[in-house]
Length: 254
Ligand code: NDP
Image (cartoon, rainbow, N blue to C red; front, side, top):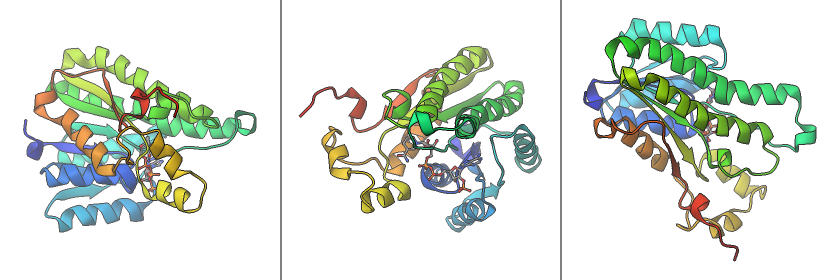
């Protein structure tokens, strides 16, 4: 099936990486489901897609809660009939030392970054299994591979995303559903730009540690997601592709 005949749901596509994935898939002709917490953000991306000649619906909801995921997939089924590609991109980070991290912080990060993927993937697979095909792509992080300090729930949840990817891939392979992950490195989103500008993050120090000597662009991640959703990638499943300019490959200290 060509991408222009596919329906793709991208969670957390009201901003940042998710928005770039939604725009790229729309430009390739896919019909898009834009999701975010805030209605104004998902509505704005839906409008942007339509202004480029694409097709999209906006379904704002919290994907960490079962009842809202049920509502999201009811809307998808009503509007588009089914779904072909699910990109589990919604995620949050809370940065503080483990001794200051509260139970509520832990639960918020885990439910947004990991439980949402379990809930959305099950709901998507219920529609994909009868068709005998589907692609699920989960957004992890290099922090799920190499931990950064002060990110205990984030790093652990993102490591969990990689294992959940492999688990679902081996369970659903018999239904011809592929499940893969992308682990982005330092991606130049508005948040990262802001933190560098205010001095909270040392951009030069990061770039010294990135062999390709540049930050990732949201389009770099969108391209990798598109690759995994392409027909030609149908023999790839249970994998995590790291898109980090060589950061995790690098072991030297200069
Ligand atoms: P942003 O913070 O820019 O955007 C996050 C998006 O997710 C927003 O649209 C937000 O909605 C939505 N969202 C958050 N929580 C929920 C929820 N419970 N239900 C539905 N939508 C939700 O994130 P990024 O673009 O930076 O990151 C996207 C993904 O990539 C995340 O999983 C992140 O962990 C991962 N990542 C990012 C990296 C980076 O450098 N930026 C590096 C490695 C991984 P709203 O717009 O309404 O607020």
